[in-house]
Image (cartoon, rainbow, N blue to C red; front, side):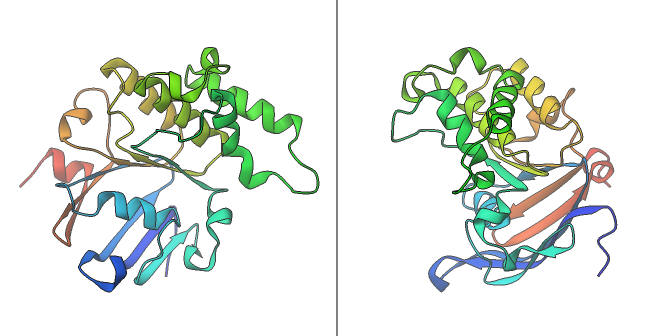
Length: 232
């Protein structure tokens, strides 16, 4: 199998919850370095499930997920977290941590039990907060800021993981339009993204999606940018 220029390859992936109704069925696609892939489909079509399978939260019932040629089925979720990070749709935190503590959780995959955290871990966390404009919130309690501010904090947490691939689960839902574009363009600076979206309007004018994955009732269609901008 050739993995030339592909940072992520999904090969025949299927998934069902508790062995019942199949949510994903024989999904196949690849993502190249620096590419932005949009995932779209109706509620219940498996968009969030696919992101969870790629990030190692769920294991596929069939098929393989290759990251830079390595089969993720052989990796622990802790190891996967060193190169794939997720910005979740739900950013509510049960415990009232300070913002800076939530962002610093992105460094946990790298922290040794013996050596503990380093100055470099703190530097990376601070830089991630600066990039997402969440540094002024660093001393605030996470439960006391707005939904849009929490999404910025979770973007910072994801960046603090120093990922090679970023998965975004409708992360723009609480952000104003201009900030959505600003953050997506920032995140996509050389970093491959998988973005779950509700509708195509997000991609108009300023967001360039390189390819589009449409999920509908266990079926899927994969389009290059040329194919979905210039339909037959």
